[in-house]
Length: 213
Image 1 (cartoon, rainbow, N blue to C red):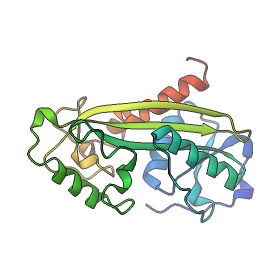
Image 2 (image 1 turned 90 degrees about the horizontal axis):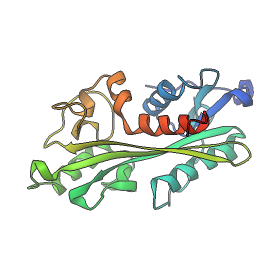
Image 3 (image 1 turned 90 degrees about the vertical axis):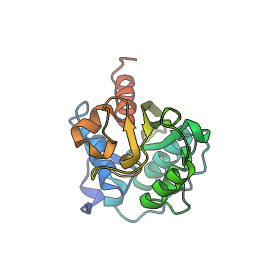
Image 4 (image 1 turned 120 degrees about the horizontal axis):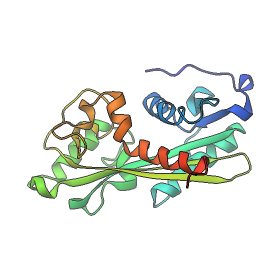
């Protein structure tokens, strides 16, 4: 799904939040969830505003990387920005792939290679020991540098083979505890949004923004 280009000068700085991504799937997911509590805000992807160099994600935690990406987007656009850093944490692999989830196999964003490496590393691991969780931290930074963030997780386990045509990343291998027998990639967008780690992180962020926490 291609992202349409937008002239940054046509945007209202007070009612625009830049989502620090060029991934149309992630923009849609964030907009669908956070847009419900911020209906007056227009969410645009950083990739829609131009070609920007990705910052070096050298943080050692999801929060550090989320802040790095959001701060870079603020500096590049002069607009409020939101970024998430998400990853898969597998107990039998001592937390791998963790913050390296997107580049687990060496090439950033190669979902097929990342999934293949995960399955190889879990060969011989029994079902009861394949517990894992998707984790997400979403950081919102305003133009004054104020950081507000939310955290979320989706508990589950790793399947022995990929199933499903929806989603991206490790979704075909991840079996959420809330949807027995189905991988994340077999869920509809609404089903996934209702349980996803990003949903929980955005709910946490929303609670902070509305003063409920």
